[in-house]
Amino acid sequence: MDVYYFYSYGTAAWLATQAAPLVASPTMIVALLSPEVREATTLEVYFSRTLGFTLLTLGILTVLLTGSVPLSSRLSEGATTSAADPKAPYALPTLTITAIFHAAYAFYGYGMWTETGVISFGLGTIGSGFLSAVALWCILFASSDGRISRKTGADKRTSGFPFKNSEADKRKGR
Image (cartoon, rainbow, N blue to C red; front, side, top):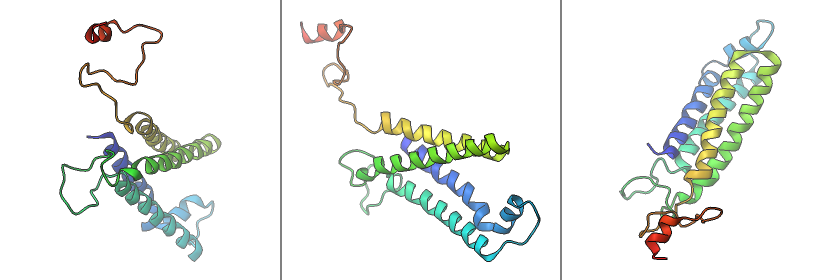
């Protein structure tokens, strides 16, 4: 499985997991967060459901804009993130924005976990931190095409500094 697909579907699943209780039972969320047991106000229900729908929308947009779901009507070999693919221009910006989003969630969760000691914040920190690290890995390593030489099979972007590549020199005939 391509790491792009893993990240985009993982992000969608993580955000859907967070959105489900917000949409399904905002009263339960308010009861858990409030020191006294009371009924949720209309404004609290509205904000809870709005946040839940926003998280669902962000998850769906991540799946669509990273190219995990083909958006064109013609059948091709599959969804790729190559430069010839029409949806490729959106993959890297989407990864960058969602990586920042997950990193911000992880830092906030960690701050709340150290302040309150509630284990849910710790679990949220682990989930968002993991997805942020996967997104960073995708941005750094999986987003650029390697310049592989057809003759030698080596990456053309490498240099011989500070060590000499005697194997490549043998193939070149030096």
